[in-house]
Length: 234
Image (tube, rainbow, N blue to C red):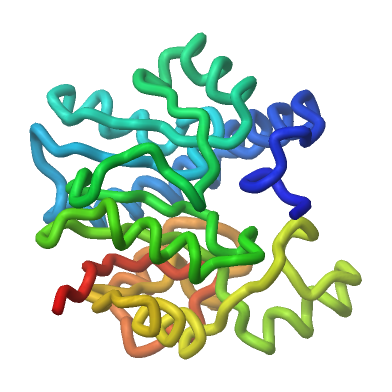
């Protein structure tokens, strides 16, 4: 396996610099402003949260500030990245672990975040089954994953010589595929939305605002799908 979620021997400096550069991009702040708004009705105090593939812990830093009584476990295969997150205060409870064998008990978490994870995994079904084990019956799994619509992949291949948004991606799922893999692995989708729409090819406020209102076009999400789901119990 050859990506940051499966390979602890990844070039640490390169990976860390990439993360820092990404989160310093002003468009990322706008992106998460609308993401947390999408998720707001599911968040409250005293939740147990597991953030898988957390990197330096930047996105869930918002929860540390807004809901200080939440307990957040930040999981990554790369221990050096975890240490950096601890050093800057974005990670409080680091867990160095593979996503396929998590050190948590059954029905452990109220919320599991899988932000930009699925597209990196060579065994996504195995990871989803492990998450299914640790999420509470009334808990939720929150997923961000890029839209693998053929139109965007074709354009990227022409313009960037790579069909995928990131060359480290193993697979990018389109609307029907992401629903199918989640349902197949025991999840019910509560909400799915596109991050923004193709009226704007940059992450600006207009694209996000349109995506909030025109949900019928979610399958055309430009950039990512935002998904809230829960496990199906027999």
